Image: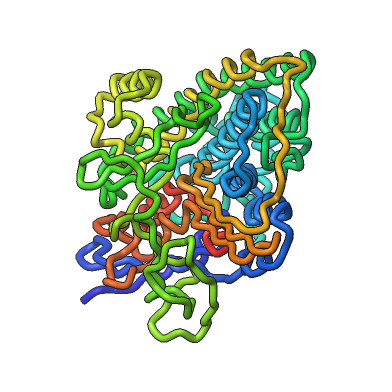
Length: 504
């Protein structure tokens, strides 16, 4: 008979997520993912000036606000018939790349690494690094205290297997501390052209409002090269070290193997070519992206709005007492299929299309270093590896973008708000495919809908009862100790859930 385990809330993610798994014979046989709150951003936007949208939607998230701003202005640009000049496009790429890098760094080091690193090993540290010595004293004091929550965020935690090598643990903890500075540096880099971060003020329909100067170019280059060094010499090696210590996670969390990507980081002014390609992988076959195939089911979501609608026609009508519904997240589907989105999806699509030799080069290099086959990346550990690879690619390309900026050239094209119009903005947040749909009537927002990455990944069952991506990926996960279901938590965190986005 199946035993039920509730992990509520899942910690070290963005927002409030509950996971319920049913376990038989030491393995998960069924799982349920539930977003636990309602926010109502789409209702907030109705009736407002369209230009409010890129500012309000950025408040959906403090980790990936840039992506929401980008999706919003792209939706408006389609409605207004305007696009940014080259400088504007490149600056947007730089701001977004900085946001990706800080997001990937914080996810690995500050949200997920603690699933693998043994903080208690810091007690054995005998070196001279002042930061580590200070941390050693603090951890020892916390471990000897009777506090209910000692050494947070390092403790308390599940009793599980962690990295045994003391030197590797100490190095990982040092890089945990270094990553705090690197994340701040990425924010600072993005803010040079974003005005401030999080929640940039400079992204507008038609481009950006921040001009290009030689001083800004020099500052961006210096910061990005520092970030590149950390990515190459700390982040990627640490991911490989964790992967080597826990190779079994290349066989966990595999999911359906269906991937969706909208394309991101346009490489030309016509947006016909992206650094990471758009497309869909379904049952191992690659297809061109067709946005008309996107729909949202709500049978098990706490909404009374009609099910199966395109987001362009979608509604957000809360129904907190709805029978059998268990999540405040809708269930988006692509042609009726459950799709995974995120860094892994972007790399798999670009690799499958074969149009970006840089992506292929980095994937091949990782596989060579680990001795793995490409299908091994479709896993919990593969998602961590994909973010590291993506960070490498972005740092390399961002240096080229910065060098391609032209001092004195325009960053913005003027436009007029249409009285009536529709637009869709499809981009990619660090966590995956992000879409904003806007309907304008009498110069005001008549309807606004967002379908965000974690809506895809952490969706509940759809109208046919088919589990969402995380729900399905958990099936087969080993649970040897029902009081310490660490493998379940590791698989969930490999998706980097952002429930604040998903329950927007």
